Length: 324
Image (cartoon, rainbow, N blue to C red; front, side, top):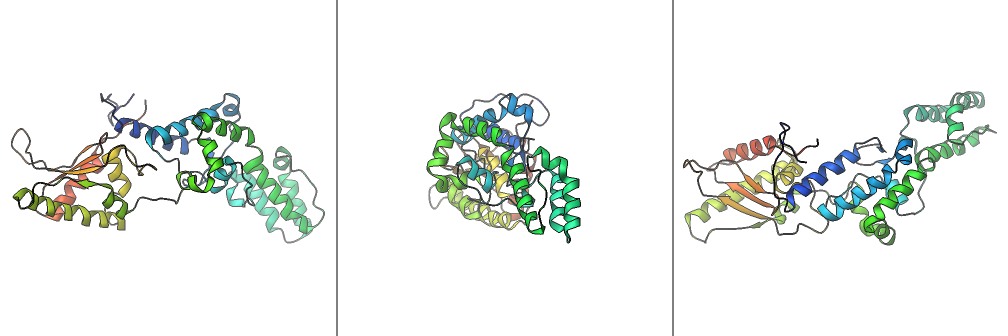
């Protein structure tokens, strides 16, 4: 169920906006869960034994498939390595930075940093329990064999031990044929799953919306032209990082998602203007949005500073859905 920031349930007719909001939050929760490890935008699989036992990774794959196909939410937090694994392609060498287990990485770093054969052997001895767990227990024959041991242990940790989880994840992704499409078109679909691709830009935000104007020559049209100038100037400042909000937060306010869906929105997003006063006769100072139809309604202000203050105040304070 949906709740607001105070924990109160919110009634809504779901014509797309609530679904997108829910699926965006779901993907973020999966990204930050114990089932993945690594930097926020470049996650590898982590191994949760009970998760494998209960089929959690298959469910995660199903969730990601539904989020992508039903809500247009990009699960773009996967690492290049994990995406390549999901496509059943050959992966490259594993770096120590990819090893999510801090203790194991320290052991491997120590083996790599050893300057003498005796130092290297002692480091291997200290790492022996961890290496045995990975199936990489082996004695050093010489200094040159260190790198082979390090690479074998790193790959066993990052790829080998998570294979059952990976197989489940692929099975879940194939519930809607997503994994099958990834294997058939790995390069085309990579931007959907790997961070750093198709990032939201000022230009994409400017071209996203169709503006609904009043008739040319009217006083309303003059105010709308000025407001649209404010909107574009503000977007440029937001894109530069000099404002309190981000482009992602603006898009969330309008649509419920932080990235434009791969196939776009069901309807062309629109910008409208708030000319009609409130019931008490006062002006509408704050922006409004219809996340289902993806309509942003801009308030009319005489100065750029007033426009920005009310826009940012509304976006920063607007409630969002949460989980219970």
